[in-house]
Amino acid sequence: MNQRGVFWIVAGKLLAFPFDETATGGVAKSGKTFNHKLLWEQVKPCNKPYNYYPRGRVEYAAKGKAVVYMNPHVEEKYIAEIKAAFGITTEPEIRYDHSRHYKCCLD
Image (cartoon, rainbow, N blue to C red; front, side, top):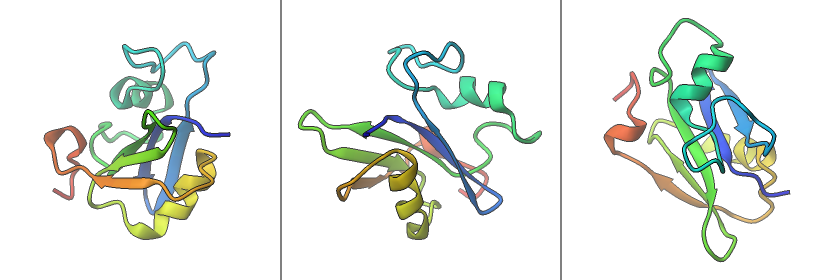
């Protein structure tokens, strides 16, 4: 099942949050996925800010192809885990985002 959502790489582990339509917290303005900053405040796995760790997002293009937007510091070795966590069964398009939006402590 293809799911949108957000993720972080925290201490070498994937922390993935596939979006659930029944979610009431951490939801983006669109209402179709999570917002990193808002969700971090709810799950807060540590005392670091939401933008400290490398992070990314899974979306779907108009034709249903998975697109993974992520900080360039998310290593390729995590792609298989990301695919599994979000139910991606085909090769996703990977877009390394160098913008301020995905910056982390490693940038």
